[in-house]
Image (cartoon, rainbow, N blue to C red; front, top):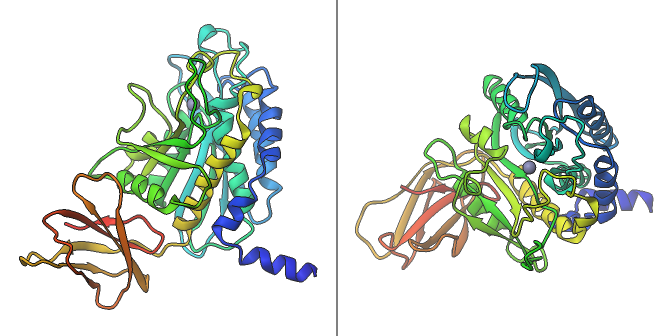
Length: 383
Ligand SMILES: [Zn+2]
């Protein structure tokens, strides 16, 4: 009986795992850390919080946990240069391609910036993003994945994205192959105090760039999640972040990695960076759905073969569209297409790799965008 139960765990689908997201875990984690006066990156309380988070990750079998040290320079909101920490938990896969899921665990009180002891529970900003990453790790560690999954609790975000920049620069210098970064920042509430409410969506911000594939990552997360989380889906926002604001995904974009930001629909700005960012305002059912979205996205990307290369459309004038690409490791590929005015994929078809060619009948390349992706991976737009 025990053996059967453990075997069943190994063959669970991402959707089965997503059903196991537990609001009690999210509540316990956020409850513990938001009860500290603050987690200001300048304070020793940051190390205390990092130790707690690292211990939570160490409880999960199969994870390799690192408390990474880096220097934060003297500057605005930082009285003296000092060494600080953040937490990286790695679930090794068969390949060294990495998928990162994270949030930042530091907090700040902007009304009393010079008072490093000022109360800043930061329950939503951003224990919500940090907690859901731990929950994703707990569930994803129950199965084996082709690619390597990395769960990060960033620090130094509120002083200027220092923790994510330190990790992105380290990743670049060490040659990490990061396929995707899902940065979750303020994902724990479905309503604002002006009466707006939306339990059914989370915003997904992506930058359009020739140096990374973040826009296609966002489109893929939307496509892959369809119909998988009851009453919940992402809304694509084609901006790198909210107007004149920033987040940890941008540090990875700057190093050429595909990275997107998830943020609730209706933020309550008066609670952010104040003593009022409290546990009692977190909507745990909403946060659980955000965790499910991260889980099914990361699971798909973690099981995908390498992306195809040199994806193009045959130039010949024809009613059908012929796509050609250089296959990578995968035996099957997904072809996607959409009208040129559509922001999201409208149709798809799985084909055998063969010689890296597929014909989509009666869909004219003059009127549609096409892409080809490894099954479950980020599509590559056809040129
Ligand atoms: Zn934040």
